[in-house]
Every structure is written in C-alpha cells, then in structure tokens.
Image (cartoon, rainbow, N blue to C red; front, top):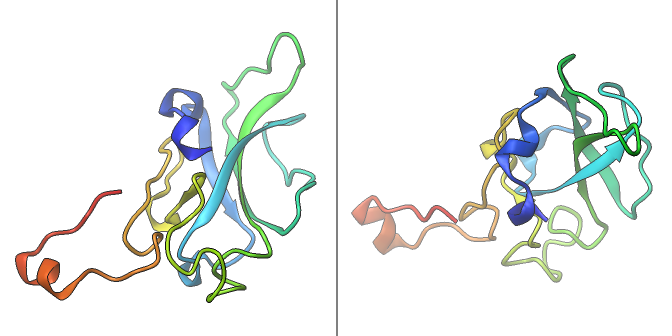
Length: 133
C-alpha cells in the first residue's frame, strides 16, 4: 500500500517508464515488488494492467537473502475508475492509489482531490484552499 511505502525505500529510483499516458488517469495503484533486475519491464501477474514501473540506478543493491531488487510498479484493476467511472471508485480511491501527477523518482506521491474522485467545492476555490490528501 502507498501509505506503507517510505521514501527511504525509493532512494535508488532513477526514472519511471510509463506504458500509458497518465494525463488521462485520476490515480494509479503503486506497490513495491521484488524483481530480479534493476531495469527493464517486469513480468506482471495481477488482474488488470501495468501502467508503469521504476528503474533503479546502479547503486541499488539486491537483497542478500533473495537477490532481488524492490522496485515500484504502477497498475490498475478492471474495476478502477478509468474503466468503470460509475463503479466502486467513482469517488474515493484504493489505499495504494496516488495521483500520478504527484509522482517523481524517489518520492512516494500522494492522493489529491482529483485522485479521490471530485473537484474542489466552489467554497474552497473561492478561499484558494486545496486539500493535500
């Protein structure tokens, strides 16, 4: 889950590879997966689809016990808002979801009003208030 990912676990991220245009996505799910390499497209074994993944720099060391690297993978499930806009997540977002506009290598990202499914209220816009979620 996004809330469980710490920025200390992301320090070796060098870049992201996006497999889709994220401008059209309100949110993406993220997870830290154990992968055999620092770079390259990982195998994907979930329902839904992979939207992107992180590349690690050469200073990233594999786990001593497993020989794998922890890399972020971004993904969506068939019932997520982009394919089911009136479904389960017409408002709100899964716990591991973040707004892709807030992501950067080494930064875990965050939820926003957009990722949570709604625009700001008129009152909040008048006051210039945005909610960091």
